[in-house]
Each structure stands twice: as C-alpha cells, then as structure tokens.
Image 1: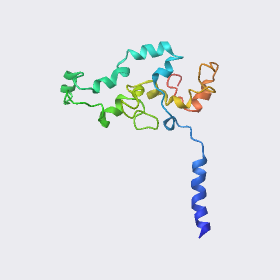
Image 2: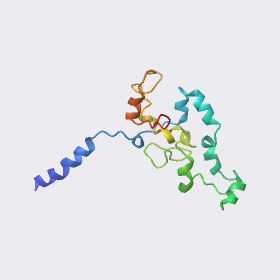
Image 3: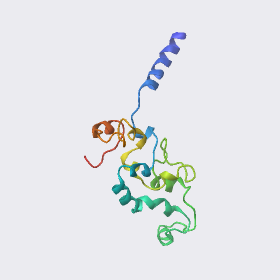
Image 4: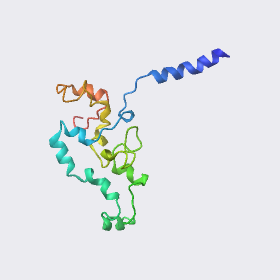
Length: 150
C-alpha cells in the first residue's frame, strides 16, 4: 500500500523538480525596463498605436470606430476580458497584466508581447547594463523571443 503511494508521488515530485524556461512562467517587467538599453526603439514604440491601444478601451475614446464595430462608445471596456487580452501585455499569463490599477506598466501592447516576459532574460547574468557583452544565444535559451534574427 505504501509502495503504491511512492509510485504515484515520485513521478509527481520529479516533474516539479524539472527547471522551466518558458517566458510565460516568469514576470513581465514592462516596456519602460527595455528603455534603459533600447532608448531609440522605446521612443519609436511609444508613438505607435500598440503603445496606446489600452486607451481605446476607455469610455468615449474612438467613438466613431466603436459605433462602426457595433460597440457602445460610452462603455468602459478596460475590464472586459475579451477586449483586454489584445490590448495589454501578458494578459492571462503569470506575471502579466492583471488590471490597470495593479499592473499599469503592462497596459498596451509592449515589447514583451512579442519578445516574451523580460523576467527570464533581463538579469545581470544575461541582458543588463552590467553585462553588455551578453550572447544572444544565451538570452534566447532562457526566454527571449527573437523575431528579428529569424
């Protein structure tokens, strides 16, 4: 009887001990953290509709476009999950957008929407101001999604 518990628990414990490297399992930091090293890219992104897309969900914003889409222009869509998931960074993922009060730094479609949660690779031993000589292969291995070099 005790032996059957060991057969059940041992594999479960081994699964828990396996290190995980997926970006979705780590904290999202927000695009302002990227600005420290990627100022030119950040300033460019800041002017895009991706950076400002959360604002569209607020009442009265883009009223004509909302009407054309069959939406109530006076409704607050900032808490509507079916809208929010496409207008923020990391919604529904560990460390991702929760709501505007809790995680305002993740409002809008930010850098990590494409490049993965920065908590995996924005670390001293990988990509940081302390380690400007990082190897791209190392940060890709721990979670950076590199869509540019592919």
